[in-house]
Image 1 (cartoon, rainbow, N blue to C red):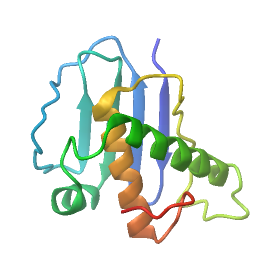
Image 2: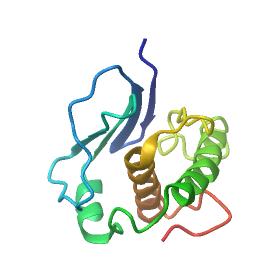
Image 3: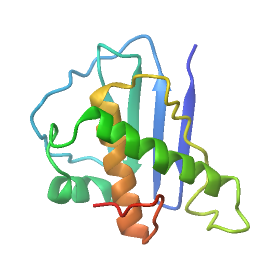
Image 4: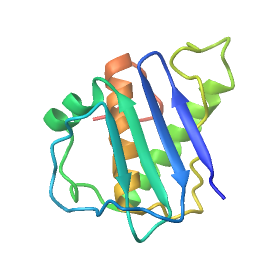
Length: 142
């Protein structure tokens, strides 16, 4: 069974899916992202991340902190707050730009998505907040 969630806006999509197979190994090095579609998978978990955004790769290569800079618990804490606020905005289209917040993120705090998934989600949400001048939580994205 596959579970999907999408975030669609004018220029991007973020997808987290549950799958029984994954082919990409996770590395501790900071690779350069060169495509508008980024896929992150880990053989140890059943989740993968797809990020489709023409500006994210360039931002990630220039501004993202290296893997290991933040702990997984730090990333999970930020992701929980930001995803909760993101989803609140999705369900309040009269208050927030529906072109920015089109679809909810199915991020469940009781699931261990692993470091790589949390790292990429965190970086995407930082990128989103900085690019669109949004603040999703009680603290500023850096």
